[in-house]
Length: 350
Image 1 (cartoon, rainbow, N blue to C red):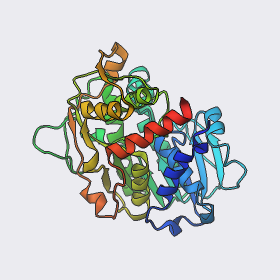
Image 2 (tube, helix red, strand yellow):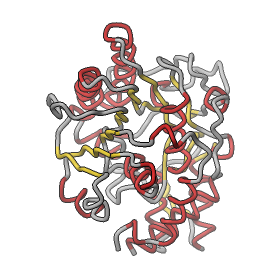
Image 3 (cartoon, rainbow, N blue to C red):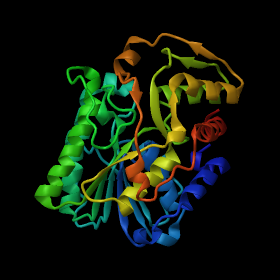
Image 4 (cartoon, rainbow, N blue to C red):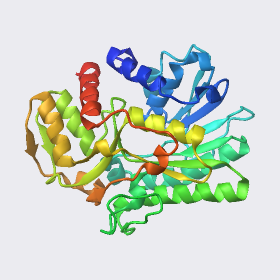
């Protein structure tokens, strides 16, 4: 089953499409999305394509044409959607095509990818971001939205409960795993450079750990592995003591945050995307899924590749008051988001 054929998933998209936003600002405009088949990019595409009355044209950019053809097959003939096969680590151009907004979300986003493709992880967030910023500037885009990450903060130094946007934690840059957070930091610095030197308008949502039914089945993040196990009716495997305390976001809330930043954000500002109702330890997160699916939590040691890609942060809780001041509110707590995700993944893939 294609994800978009799931009635449960369609209900999630419809709920997101009803989010109180200035949707009219997208009317007749064009939006280019990199990482289009990824978790947030694909959900955002589904939401906008569910509102054809806007006449908002989507240019979806990604490397996997076969995956995109299957995922977005319902949109190809409507005149409002175009998939572009491209590697953004190479210079990217679309001639004289008018692009109003760019949402740059292409990146490796899970531990095995960090460990097995460290060069690609770094370069997509630096060279790829540079190429897309150059593209946005050349096409005179009205706004560039860079999907940044909670990982720019690194480890909590023990001097704060929640990370505000001006906090600088600790990252050991001399490790393989540092490529992702350092790449995101460099991506944000590039945005600031383009704002100053080329007059580009850019904002940076810093996304907490995001989950939802648009996750790829190849995703190796802990929460994604828990969800897959739960959907398959198997015990939930926890590969640590589970004491790590993190902020999470359901994909619908994350996509709404991206749109709020696009439509209401202030140029040059970063905005934390998180909600206190989704702050949880890994152990408790695994327990919610186990309880919902009637299974147990079991412990297992990670293999060497997984371990190399794991975040070393033990506590990463975001203060989202700045984003909430723009009018964003999360609609899903952990139990609500996880139950919906497990149900949809089970229906579509199992």
